[in-house]
Image 1 (cartoon, one colour):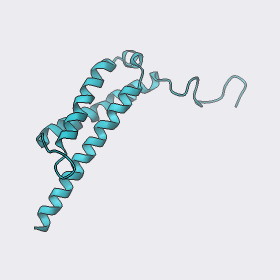
Image 2 (cartoon, rainbow, N blue to C red):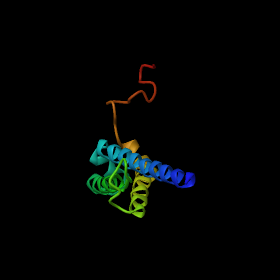
Image 3 (tube, rainbow, N blue to C red):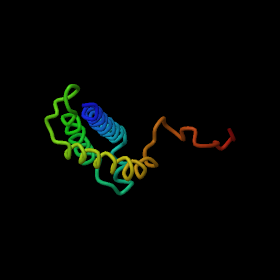
Image 4 (cartoon, helix red, strand yellow):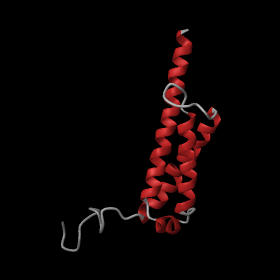
Length: 115
């Protein structure tokens, strides 16, 4: 009985972590400029947005009750995790140097006149 409850809680936590990972990847992908993907030699922003949007939806619908619907099987949540991890580990670091946030140099070092 106790073992079953622990399994349910761990499974719930596992799917929630996948959902958070997918949301993080999607939000990051949407915040990057489209030109950064081209400059990094990766798939376009539109393709990554679609992939991660679907991954986020699948992860959301994979969360089991009582917090979610549990409409999709677990292996689909694992595919969502794979898509998010590929983006976060491969695409995000490649696109980051081509993304300018905060304008200008963004505190990357001294300007011509020093600090």
